[in-house]
Image (cartoon, rainbow, N blue to C red; front, top):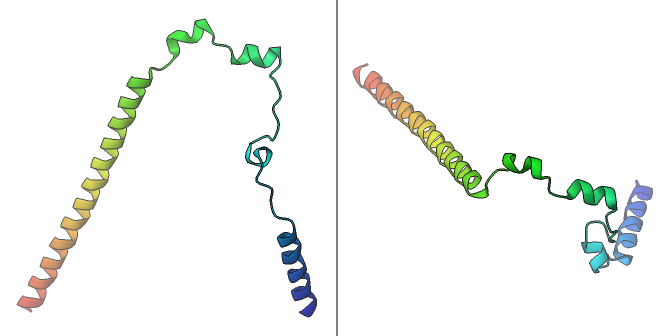
Length: 100
């Protein structure tokens, strides 16, 4: 048990002694920049034959907004239905206990 505690404090002191450097390299995703080669540039280039399949940002935004509104309406409807059933069950329970 004592060896485990000593090992644990050793690890903690090691971590404290090597703070992370907050340089641009550690904050960037890859740490270095490599210029893309000709193949990568060709793959990233815009293809005119695919232009007609490209979605329009405004219509996509509108469709997403409609989906969000429908989701909220369905969730609200479900919550209302649960509430109504709970109230009706409570009223039925009160009537049953009042008549008995």
